[in-house]
Length: 325
Image (cartoon, rainbow, N blue to C red):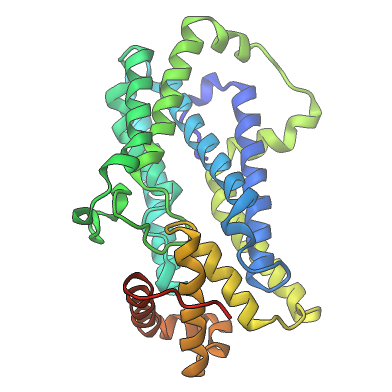
């Protein structure tokens, strides 16, 4: 993600690691695009190994943000450079929110990874002068917070950025303060330890060969890469779909798979199976299932889908299990 380190004291190894993480992120988004257009089974990227893969990528970015923040400002905050970088990242985050609000208003990105980087970089300044051990303790506390502090009081759109609501809100990229700020703090602590034991100087002395040029370039232009890669990828898949469209899907089966995969992020399997069966039954009864294949129709049906979801939640929570079809 966006480089916070001083341009005059770049460490090739960090640029290469950042570039590798960006390429990994592109591979995940490409798979998401294939799923969106029907070439990959619905729900593939939202659970299992792909979900774990996505979390590892996000964690690596945020750890490197913490490392870069410490390397750039650990011996004194260079305010002009910091505010310039902060403005770029915050501006890009705002642009993504605006664009996704118009493209996918039912799952727009109101607090994604760029929002987390902007806020986390600002909050991280308070930890730069602390010893590594207290910073690691704070990181552990931030990561653990959602396990202990989730409450209905945080289930308000104005507080969703905290990540402490009982259930995660819908968003195509949701990276709230808790637990993800913990990764930035971990990066700050690791960078302090690396400087203390001479690892930072050792890494600065390493020089990679020509093989690393693509990774180095991506790492040094990470914000541009992040903003451009997904529109390019999704445009390529869309063009391919105009010539070789994906085969027609089993709508009912695809809906059940996607519903259960999304539901599993918030509830147990004993709830998800009957809940998704209930939703499928209601959608078929009201002849809405076919309309969900259109993104525009999904947006128009947002309120109706929410109402059906509430009915099914109440039915499953209060009554006997509804068997899946």
